[in-house]
Length: 255
Image (tube, rainbow, N blue to C red; front, side, top):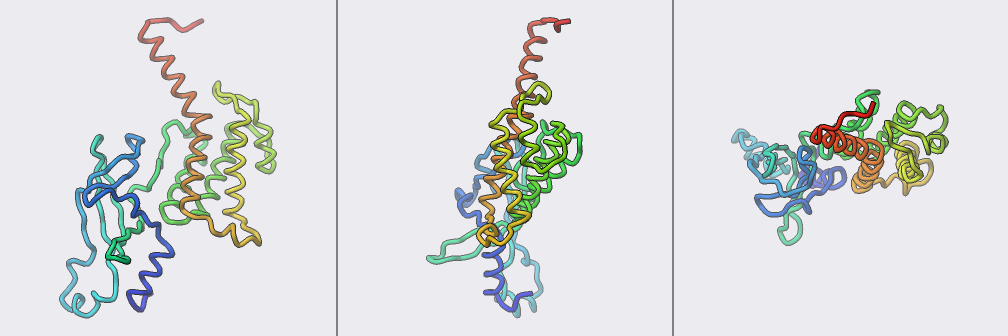
């Protein structure tokens, strides 16, 4: 509960991600389209302020005491998909507006990756939990769930003998998964995810490790995507290209 507007403003500053740098102009924001899988300028097709239909008593007595969240609806100019953001708009020095994202519908980032194996289900579940934790401004929780997704890969897909994750990563180097060879680069990237996840779940006595920011979580997701790309996306793309070529040139499969 908040006693006044200043308490609410402080809560917003401490708990929500500032997205001011994503705003291009009044009608366009730089957002990621999860259908096109690219970041581009989205159009603002609607902006609604919560509380516009408040009673006269409410307006007169309480409107001075709080900042109302604002709902934005954005549309991709290419595929026409849309998303919603709930934001707080805070006025800073020199009357400049600063924007803080409360949530995104659907979640930000690539919540579903087609090439990510559906079996075991725990892999996609862990990845979705990580992206939703990022959207809920819980970067430490996101780090822990990216680590969980990595462990599902090592144990359930690459067949590592259950041990601590560091030893499992050493086990799987050189193994194959559907034609893709697990390289030392894979293990190096995975090690970063493991260590960041450990910091998220067990910061121990180092207070610096508690300062795991939304930017850290976004960087960790990018690192996880590098791992996913090497093991799943690139081999899938190469196989599709080969199959398409064989079909187009009417070349029969080798017996």
